[in-house]
Length: 159
Image 1 (cartoon, helix red, strand yellow):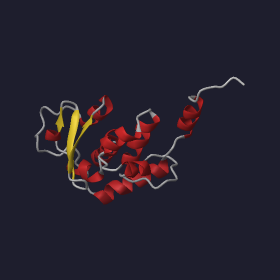
Image 2: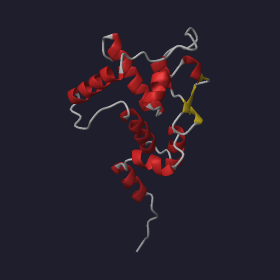
Image 3: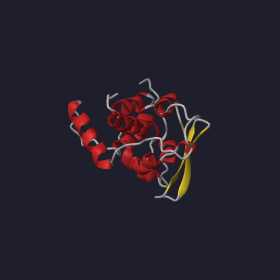
Image 4: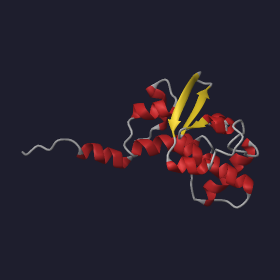
């Protein structure tokens, strides 16, 4: 993790997005009262629906202990979108990533991690909060290892 507080907040928010699939708008406005029973509850204004996403240990560790916090307090106190974007681009270049690195990439990462770990497209779609499965397919890049696994799972014929 970075050393200065602002950079740490940006890193925490990006990583939390990688483990929850929350949009930038939901990440920016996320409060402690939205965390309940190891689940994050949020309203997607785009689809006008409430969603519940279970939190794994990594996601929980990124938000820390919520008991002593102001329930209405924001979990992530990032300076600005521009500052966050500048940091993410810098970190991407330092890591040798050729792709444009931005906060929304955490959502793509969440979908890809889930799909490559064996989650089905429908479940990932519901976790992200999409109404249509086709929307989730945009996020879902077919991974070569998944293609190999699918082909290897076909029945073998003895000829």
